[in-house]
Amino acid sequence: MKVLVTGGAGYIGSTTATALEQAGHTPVILDSLVTGPRAFVRDRVFYEGDIADRALLGRIAAEHPDIACTIHMAARIVVPESVAQPYLYYRDNVAKSLELFDELLRLGKPRVLFSSSASVYAAAEDFEVTEESSLAPGSPYARTKHMMEQMLGDLAAAGDLRAVILRYFNPIGADPALRSGVYAREPSHVLGQMTMAALGQRDAFTVTGTDLPTRDGTGLRDYVHVWDVAQAHVAALERFDEALDGSTSTVVNIGTGQGVTVRELLAIFERAFGREVPTVDAPPRPGDSVGSFANVEKARELLGWTSRLTVADGVQSALAWARRRRQVLGYD
Image 1 (cartoon, rainbow, N blue to C red):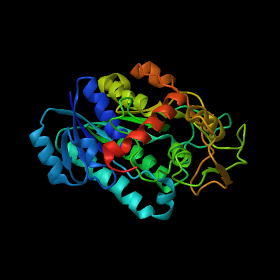
Image 2: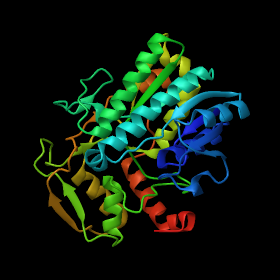
Image 3: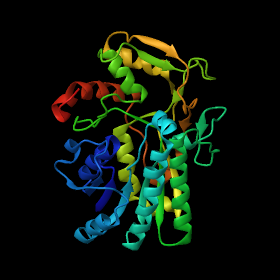
């Protein structure tokens, strides 16, 4: 199957493209390269451009009329940046996605697999969230993901568009063969910050939030290996109609089903790294949430998917990638 992957030069997008290829599918990448590195698309069908460029979308459809589905991953994703620059996030994530969805419909490409985020969920007393749990996106980034979900639901209900929405939790690690991984020089996510502190690229790892209502006071997350996330996209693509189960759109959680606190992640990391990581404590960042973990029954039932790799696997592959990425990307 041929698949259009927006944001396919990104961390998760490039890993998903590899998983698609291994499953016998052909990814066609559309990426602006505003953040994603060109190195991740060198050997693939690639179009450099904006997701809202209707002329470019028309050219891609004309040159690849057998595209059967679009995996929409292109988005700005940094929570503190979204708090500081909300206009960029609403423009690039929401307004441009609306143009993309409308043009896909016009081109007769109505099947969309959308990468959403668990950041849309409200805090749950026991931290476990199902697809029906309350929503309360706490940052402009999270609100853009919620808005895109709402747009897809409304467009699907009104016409031919069909949408499977994957709300995945906290991807970690790298492609198991170390072909791609986190590319930001200063990643904002917790494992990236931890790795930088461990390798001496910053003075210390900052634990943001230490008096939260969790078992050790630090934020709790469902850390899912990026390769498992990529495999979830393959499963959703191959079972698209089964996932919809007669509806026009549906939401599926993608996670491990277990919550890990920041201090627990730090302990796992230090075991893998072989020595302690210097740390300092600080208040939560703007837009941060206490956290949650996924109920993954729906993914198991509809997609036949479950996570296979552990948090320790993710940490080990992240460390291996950190040592290799200069060879792939040309910088540490």
